Image (tube, rainbow, N blue to C red):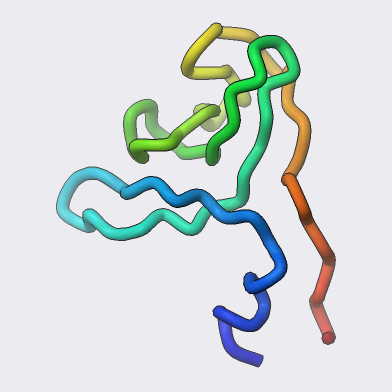
Amino acid sequence: MSYDAIKADRQLCTGYRKGGQAAKCNGQLYRCTACATTGCRQTYVDNCSEQAFDVNWKCVKCGAINQKEGPLNFVNRIGA
């Protein structure tokens, strides 16, 4: 099964990664329950144009920690 087929049903991050590998992110989306920001989770802050959380689940907009909902529209398709 191809990568595109596995991720076809999911809402994916439409942002772009920054740096030397500037490409579409396609990360899973999460929502901050404190401020409703929606975006991906990245290891470093400001790593994606649509980033919502850092590696410690800190919202990059409001600073709330571990106030996440998601991944959004996740379907476990391993073995499908």
